Image 1 (tube, one colour):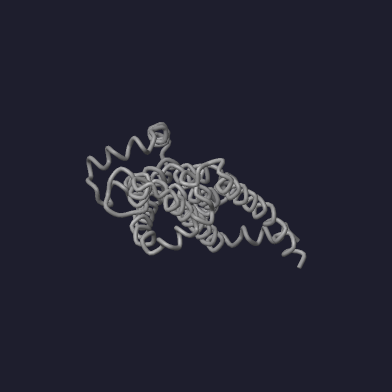
Image 2: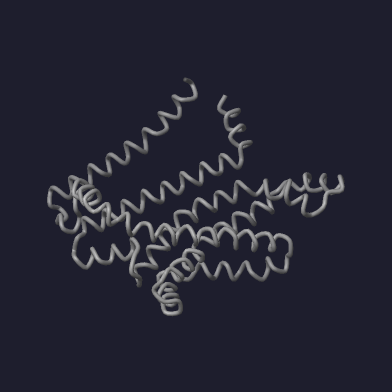
Length: 260
């Protein structure tokens, strides 16, 4: 009971803040301070969300596939690059500035070029997701590798461990917390990157749906899609948290000991 009470009380402030925001939104919309066609009320947005849910789910299927494939490719590339950059200092010096430069280019500027090169299918959307998700995961892994206790590495070397054994038993497990920190950021970026690329061309996806309802001045449906995207992003973050707890059970044990 002592453990549950702090967990319950910690959820009260965010719930209260969200309630205040929704109430203020409803008051502004109903009072006419902002015209309802420009800022539909939360009730109108929820009505549009549930009323158009089959169509939204149909388009969400394509956006989620693009996000999933892009995130998987981004994780694989990040693992390869971070590992090689940690192993070879020359690669770290060569590729780190390039990765920084890629993050200074707005995604909205890259998307039209990718559509021009790759067409209106899933390829440019997946590529943009890879570009947006690659950097946080790579930096997280790289920082994780560098933050590993050097005494643990020296101990493994003294015991005759190979580089592969040191990486498997010391470096990679030690880098997992930073990896999941970067993955949380990338998971939310994945959906946003897919939607942004869909704005500029395509046949299906939440971005395409948003473009269509915007042209029809159905702002209640547009807000409904935004809420839906927020829900998807939160679910992805929840999934990452669950996977991190399963992958790193020792951290959960440490947290429980600290709470006692």
